[in-house]
Image 1: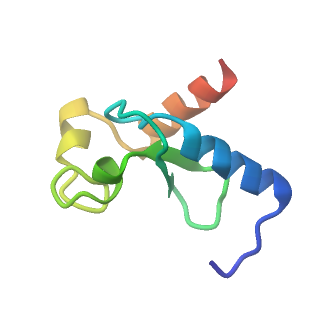
Image 2: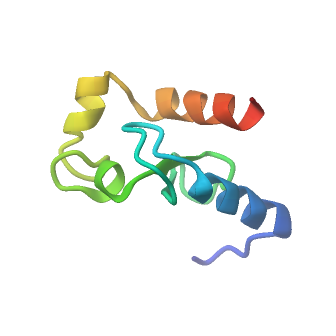
Amino acid sequence: MLNKLNKREKNHLLQIKEMDCVVCGASGPSEAHHVRQHYQYLCIPLCADCHRGSVNGWHGQKRIWDVKKMDELDALNDTIKTLLS
């Protein structure tokens, strides 16, 4: 990554990666999916399948996302809600 992360950004990403997958609920650790690249606070926790899976993943066919009727903003909302509770 070209941009250097400050301590708060690194801590936030670590916290995101410790969470369960926001889409399917798979136990963490998770991968941090950036809703918008280089915006460290716009990240959601996703398991490898919901993130990069060819069928279920956001970077694939997004089938689980369709089944759950979710998009990135829904997942971001649920992530923030979990972080604040």
